[in-house]
Length: 196
Image 1 (tube, rainbow, N blue to C red):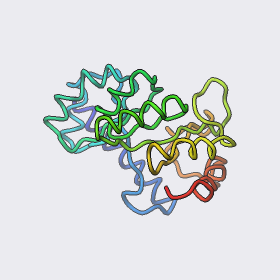
Image 2 (tube, rainbow, N blue to C red):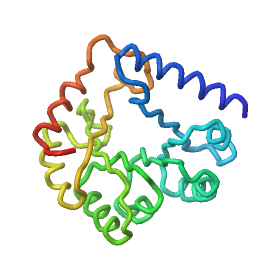
Image 3 (tube, one colour):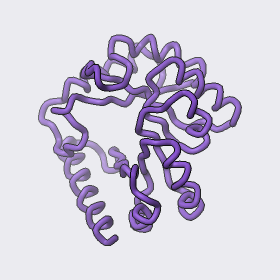
């Protein structure tokens, strides 16, 4: 698995270069290694190399993979990056440190119930579909304010995560010379949604 460590180093270097080009301070960008579909043995080399933030798409897969790895690497941060069904809220609150895909009132209510019941509060991010693409999940930008206002009583503060149109995919770590439209759209959300 030496390849994993080499690839991780290359991605870290590219992210650092892009952050510097965008005049972002060191450490301002969090690299989330997507570990979905990879078994624990494939993830372990990245953990040994010091990487600590991982994203999973499926609750069941994370439930099978991460308890043993977390016991070995207690400072790992596991993020839910895939669509989350309301009936998986219990496991999601127990497993994940961050849930990036809060996009429905029914899900928000279930997460709030589980957070209260378990006394564990993962960080929650509202998924905003800034491209208004029908095949993508997420709250539309013009509905973000009302969604956040409705969700806030159950959670306290929230933040936003975006899924951009393919042309602005997050896999491109080059620093844009002009802020993408999502920056403009979301730049106003915290101003009218209260403290984040």
